[in-house]
Length: 271
Image 1 (cartoon, rainbow, N blue to C red):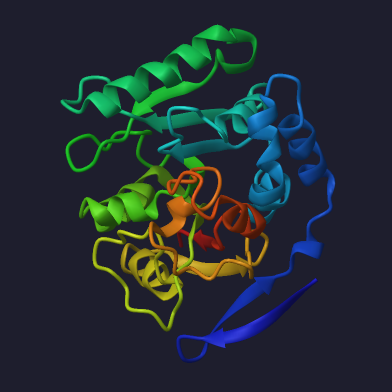
Image 2 (cartoon, one colour):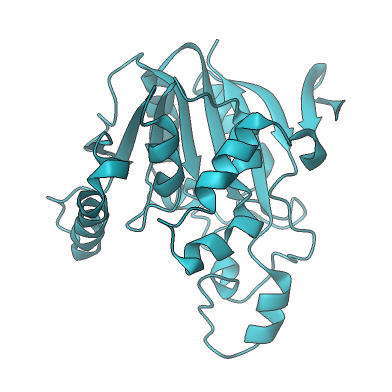
């Protein structure tokens, strides 16, 4: 089910294969991910994002307090996490700042809040907070969370110069022993890392280094969200690929055949 490899000198980390995740947690989450409350467009992405397997790898349970940072205006993972945690757990969504100067942030904050308000039976217990570094970092009470998760946001924080601050904030939300789960676009280790991650891709070693600097220990990594078809050298970066197709119709069939980006899936723990 998994093997151990040595990294960073004598430190060993478990590398988990996708086949390891076929348990009750993954089944329950995948059932929600295929639910009638989700659009066909969102459900089509399950094959690339593997929500059940990813969250089982992170170690989620329905009675946990879970913080998701930057769920996006559409709340792709909110549609899964909120129903899963609704009865026994707590879910904090560190979302856009509706008071931001940015019209983009205002628009997406409204989009997200309207989405939740439309289905109170699913989303009525979501604790919507603001995560807008560097000014607003109180996405959850300090030391309150069993788990913090974030999906495909590392490049945005790196671009804005707030990645170090985000890592420290996530560490602060967690209880001792709490888990940080990260999914991010994985860069080619042989290619130069752009300091602002303008292509969306980030070297895995850099994420590990930043997390460890913030006080986390890397516990395991998984290839659940790997995509060996992704060459990671597209003219518009990850956004050439689905679902963005930022190049329009140019080479669209080629990018559709690749699928979504190659992604690292990392589990850290707060000692």
